[in-house]
Length: 79
Image (cartoon, rainbow, N blue to C red; front, side, top):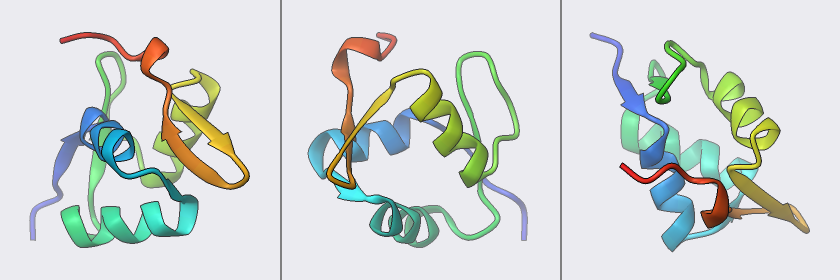
């Protein structure tokens, strides 16, 4: 099976409509894209789920409040 390469915006768009905790987000990613998915951003390639989560937090793309992840709309590039 070929590895799926998915833009990080797909994850961010999901968090915009359905904030969830990290375990729920991991489960959603697995169900939506499969366990062999890799992600890319506007500048980065071949991110694992763990690397994507690190990127999203370090760049303040997500807000994590009481364990619930949601989209930080102020930090999202518009394209």
